[in-house]
Image (cartoon, rainbow, N blue to C red):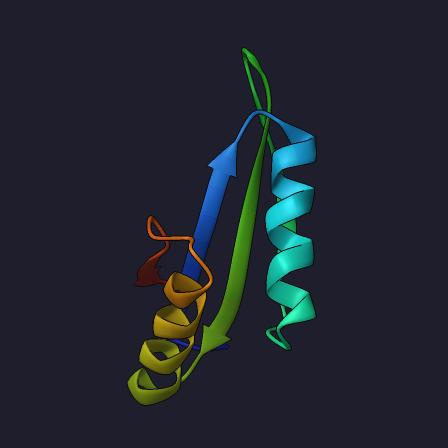
Amino acid sequence: MGNYKIVVETTNRKKSAQQKYNLITRNKINADIRTYKTDNGELYSVEVGPYSGRKQVLQDVDKIKGLGITNAFITSA
């Protein structure tokens, strides 16, 4: 397991999460949609990683932001 992951989007709209996932994977970045159950319904989180090195995670977050997803961020996995 790596030390970092990129959170692309977290939303309660499944369609929005699927659109972001499709955009990311079309650009040759492996992503997953994780579903989290809450008291108010489900949340969908589009995530990339895990990464073990800082260099690759920084390159990919820059690439994702270049696709127009400016709110993507790096977090510890």
